[in-house]
Image (cartoon, rainbow, N blue to C red):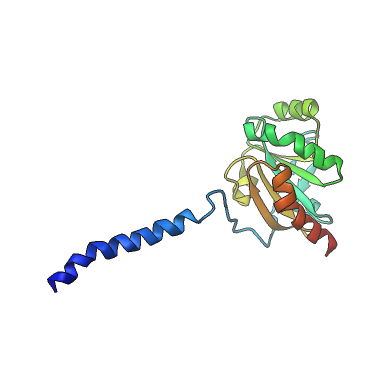
Length: 176
């Protein structure tokens, strides 16, 4: 019995080592969303360039759409922006969500850096962001033709992210 007590610290160490080993194999950038395969949350918000134009979740139906959460205060959004312009020029439908931002600054941003968005929704108080489970900007969602969220990417969309992760999903949804 006393010899068995000598092995207790070794067993505890083995269990802890197994947990740490499992933790090292996880992707720290993975941000699962509870909204995957669920309809876009209900909202009714104005757009950055025309506050009289009110957009709802129903306006996101009909085409496969990228929904991009962005802000002028977001450094990563500035890095991502030229690539979004490139995607829009290739015919990718992108709708923006201007998240907790100043509308005047957002208008200047889109004028000076080019506007990749079909329209950009003003989410001044962040309620839509909360409903989407936004951690911070930039975040990009893929919506199918029925307005159902099929994928979420946290961070900058660049050529690698687009070609390896998002484009295959968009292509599959566009076919079916």
